[in-house]
Image (cartoon, rainbow, N blue to C red; front, side):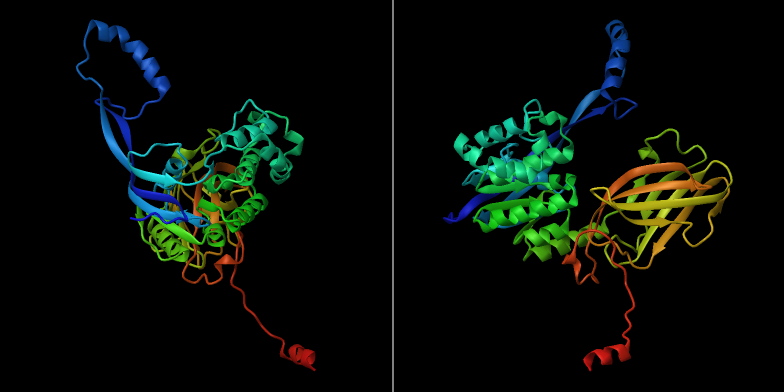
Length: 428
């Protein structure tokens, strides 16, 4: 295969294998480090005096995060990597960034690469923001004069002037990401690689980042972008690579990849064990949330019917129970709340396990990524709460014909009427 002069990344038959270790022979399949240390200390003497009849033997399992991946990316391409969690997107970007070595296959990259893959990548926590800007520039191969020329622009973009001489270990995750992105985008790499880490920033900063990545691409440089926000992919990317279980699948366009992703996501099982996620032992003594799942015939696609099924365990008769579920953007803004006692009386439940169905004729949530929290109330008092139950993406449904008008929030169907007389008076 010939290597075109404008090709900056060429990947051929790339595979990445991880070896997973398991324990067999014990009654407990999963143990913490503390368990292992304490159990080892207690049984050391016994093992020396008398061999154990049942030995714990390790087993090894191969897991292929990527399998025979091949593609070419040309200079100035804006490429979105699309796929469900575990598809291999982040692994692929780590291999392209030379953070992880491939197991087999070849990669050829022309140009300087700047990566923003995880909060904290590439920064020294003990150094200040100022020092880390110069350190990152040096790693990218830039001279001190080049970094100094871009310094003020980086600081202004990151909005960290007051904390410039503070060690970055004291930064919040949002400050960290703002500075890391500013450095990666402004120090003129030929190839900019950005993972979902931008979700840590607020909505305003995410818009700034998308705008900056667009500028980078318009300047003839290449952008590789992973995001679960399909609207961001639509706005930024000119082409897409779709991954499923470590394998790339041919797609004809960005929209084609998004539709495949949405179809795959809508088929996925939504079934959450809420009881195992409870973080506050002070809740759940009177009643508790046990499970949350999606009814089989519904989905989290915009405009489609949505039915959520809660499993609740009551430890006594409750005559005034309310269930609530809240949907928030990743920067913490509540955009929708569903309450079981809205415009209807509270639930009256006897002791036992019950299923409560929430049904919405049309899911009004605009396509985006949301954090979901759940709660139980009795007599207006909180009796169980599970914040940040899970992160879930609302995808574009078949009725969503104007999906790219904005981020987040709700979009509700409305009835339009026209005052004919007023309309005619304006014409006259």
